[in-house]
Length: 284
Image (cartoon, rainbow, N blue to C red; front, side):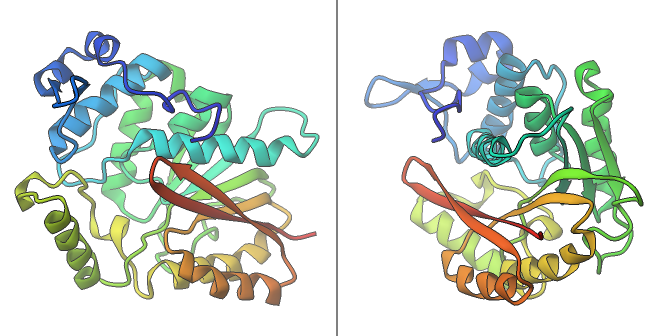
């Protein structure tokens, strides 16, 4: 993990259960004598997230309904830290402003971006329910209200259009795109995970609404659409960034960026055995 990520060490379950006593119901000692939880249990993961947000980020009130995407906070924090490194290369005065495309009900990127680095954030989403829940998470915490705004993207065919207003400027955009190309592919991937982890499907810990998990063409097409539209906002966004879950999609993405003469780089991230990356680009 990024050296500044406070989650790079083991979870302190003693402290976390003090912050959120509900978590204690799910903590047990594994065969190595280490306290842990069953990460295949959705309620356990939800209570862990509540504890992490309260203990480390002073977010007292956070929740998401059942079957919504429950994000792994350490990995989400890593993205924020690497974005900070990217911005640190530039001499920026004043507060950093960012936009999270597809904020989701969990609102996790704006929350972490503000509580870790003090950035002002805009979150956008195409689903009205997600927008309403995200707004509730912001409004429930006094330390977030004046720093995070949530907007509904009413046009499903647009990414920046309609949510980035005239004369607004953002130093960066964030995006964790839906990575499956269809509902069938998403269910197939879920089935593989269930089988690999020897789980019962009812215990699966990663929820997710359709728009959170898949879109026509998958992440490669989504990111190519984002790149094409981003050139229209080259004077309103400093760095455009997006997670790329499948490294085999990088050549297609790089080709699109080269076609538009963008300045771009691919930034690698590692969380334990998991390797991930995001693409960052800008226009001179």
